[in-house]
Amino acid sequence: MLETTLAGSLPKPIWLAEPERLWAPWKLEGEALAVGKLDATILAIKRQEDAGLDIVGDGEQARVHFVHGFLANVGGIDFELKKSIGIRNDRYKADCPTVVGPIRRKGSVHGAEATAARAHTTRKLKFTLPGPMTLVDTLADEHYGNRADMAFAFAEALNEEAKELEALGVDIIQFDEPAWNVYMSLVPEWGLPALERAKQGLKCVTAVHICYGYGIKANNDWKASLGLEWRQYEDTLPHIAKSSIDQVSLECRNSKVPIELIGLLRGKDVMLGAIDVASDDVETPEEVAATLRAAMAYVDPEHLFPSTNCGMAPMSIEVAYGKLASLAEGAAIVRKELGV
Ligand code: ZN
Image (cartoon, rainbow, N blue to C red; front, top):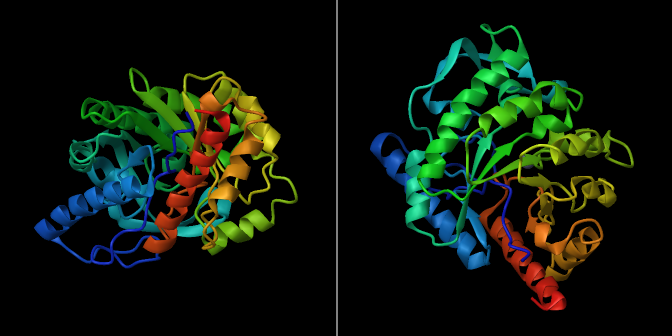
């Protein structure tokens, strides 16, 4: 009970990429980069085990970015044709590759790091993939002309990849959909149907992560504009509650999300963000425990999975793993109180 986990990304070792920077370019190339990515993956797994996490992940060590990493072996995209577009409803500009033809998975994208991760841990293994709506929102389009059609094309490619990850022994596949906190009305229209297509036929546990983004300035400024109460989840959680997704990863610690909104997910597993990724202050185990206790008024402990608000890629190694250790210790406090 109260199995601890993380949203997804972790900082990379200093020999692999520049620290504390999103979209940091690789420091290695060719064979050295391929080997370095796997070594970093194994190191991240071991550090998560040392921190005490029950469910570990690859830490997204082999991807420059959580969205564009998936595109590495997907056809129909021109990586040279980069366009600066305003993503997440123009919250910030990003240089995005362009879709120029039908989306098609050419072969395995993350098989190598999933294999390495699986070989080096006996704990439950989670793997993250970007969700269809978030992929569509982080690319320029010169082919589909319709975001829903493009999302379903990506859903098919994601489904192929997810089935491979499942066959390699991944226990939980999580689709990251920060865009669901921006385009709430489109979630029931095509966002959630596309996600259902992406998970079709999977027998492993499936999850969706919906957050308010990394702790970067554009996101922090956006959050400051959202008012005293963040009620975005109120629009989407009732639809997700009726879906076939097993787990939902939400932001809670230091956020202005009214805690009672998680009650809208009754019956689902909730990965509760008890760690703030927008602050370098490492939570104490007691602070983590307090967040978990507050959530237990709305979610049964059997369904509660203590987690982080979002990925930790832009943080320092010390802060990120310090926070994960506090997460595990905080969960242990509450487990003791529950007598389990
Ligand atoms: Zn996130």
